[in-house]
Image (cartoon, rainbow, N blue to C red; front, side):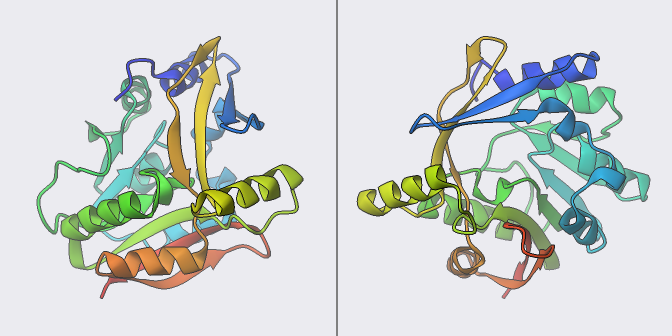
Length: 240
């Protein structure tokens, strides 16, 4: 876990009532920006796919990469017991202030839970690929399989990498082809308040890749939830 916690500082500033814009820099120089307030969205503001996925959640719930707790808080309001996990100390602190009841500070892929502890594990906002490339993602999925109940499911969000017309993204795909890497494997860092976070790898996986990686971990992609022709989708993953 990095001591910089750039993301956590942005989340804390939003909690304090300040505007926080987080820059996401890719290793080819491409820069994107996102508002920190996004991580405080109410259920009414969730993407349609998220809303549909929340209807599938069964007890007991693990929210991996919970952020400021937007999904955890909604599920708690429905009477579900939720354990909320994040790598960011400041983010966990904010989530607690907002009412998250069972926070855990930990880093994937290794999760400090007993076998078959959870009926539902949620990986929202591209958290399917938070561990990096294919091998790392399979390791992560095997760990999720270990703590998932026999009749449980994993709700994992990702972004179909090739459903884009952005020339910068298409050039990056070509660069990955030359490097022998998955098209959607990006190396990025977060920047906020004049600070730069550590570089890390994020896998944006197509449904076909999610299916393949799930199978390698003894799981199966049962179906996907998507809205119209948007590249964002949520995979419903179950034990085989």
